[in-house]
Image 1 (cartoon, rainbow, N blue to C red):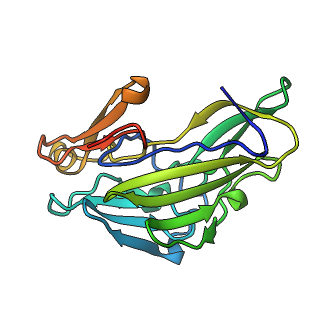
Image 2 (image 1 turned 45 degrees about the horizontal axis):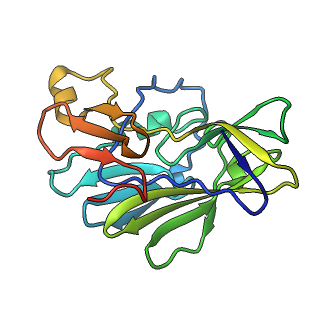
Amino acid sequence: MKSLSRSFGVFILCFMVAAFSFSQKPKRPELPSTLGLDQGFIEFDTPDFLVKIVKASQTLAALLPKESDSFDFTPFDMLESRDSDGFHHLGDLTIRTRSGNGGKWDSYSTAANRQPVMSLPASGTTLASSDLTPTLPSDCPLHITRRWELDKGQLVLKFILENKTDLPVQIGALGIPMIFNNILSRRSLEQAHEICSFFDPYIGQDAGYLQVTRLSGRGPALLVVPEGEYTL
C-alpha cells in the first residue's frame, strides 16, 4: 500500500523483452465497440519488435519479434472481438484507492468505460504518451499519464501517478493486465501451437520477472522485468 501526496507519486513499470496473458471469452455481439479501432493504429519499429498500438486508446495491438517470421505475442487476430468495455489490453490499468487514513475503497479501471485518451507530445526516447483522464471516472483522485518509451533500445511501458487532491491518497491495489495470446478456444491444436504462448511468472520483488514462451517451443521468448532494477 502506498500513500501519495500532491508532490509525490510515481509508479513505473518497464516492459522489456516479454509478456503474459489472460484468456477472455469473445465479446457478446450486442456489446458496442469502444476501443476506437476505426481511428487506426500507430506503428513503431524498435530494435527487438515491430509494435502497433491503437491510436484512440494507446493500448498495445500487436507485438511482433523481429527474430521470428510474422509471429505475434498478442491476440491481434481477435482484436475486433475484444474491442468492447471490460476487455483489457496491455497498457490498461486497474487501481483501488481511498483518501486520507480511512474510509471506503474505490476501484477504477481504464477498460471499464472507454473513452479516447488524450494524446500528449512525444519526442526523444518517448514513442507515445497519453493522459488517461478521459477514460477514468471524474472522481478518480489520481492524474495518470502513460508512456511507451525506449530505454537503451528496450521497449518500456511506464505509468506516472500524481495526486490531484489536497488529501493523501492510499493505493490498496494496482494492476497492469499482461494480455498476450494464450487464448486456446476456437483453435485447432496446430493453430494453437503456431500462434499461442504460455506464461511463467516468478514473484521475487526486485528480482521478479515474467516469461512468455511460444507453445511450439521455438524462440524467441519474451521477458517482462521491472524498469530500473534489471540489467541485460
